[in-house]
Length: 124
Image (cartoon, rainbow, N blue to C red; front, side, top):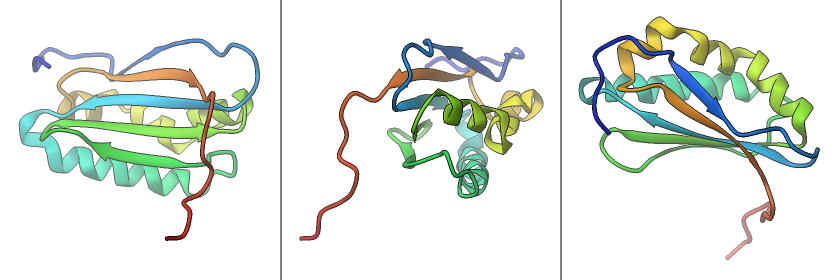
């Protein structure tokens, strides 16, 4: 992804709520090359908020390249997903100054429906 130096919106959301049921966010995050540590800290900050959210289920912060990160988080329904948006994790993404400082482009938040899942790890 190309690094942008001009200010951006911090976050862009796509997708729709659709029918009620298990919902999720897939969030693509591209760090500025010199801000990788700050993006890792941002993920830790979001997790700190998520741990206190009863309607946020499985939550994963992942890294797929030196500067590419993602969050995948699951909610029981639309109301739970909206509660997360309105909470502390959402506040972090609404801090546009911080997002402009550490992200090469706006985080892309995609609303998705969970079609199938395995709820727990099985013992070996």
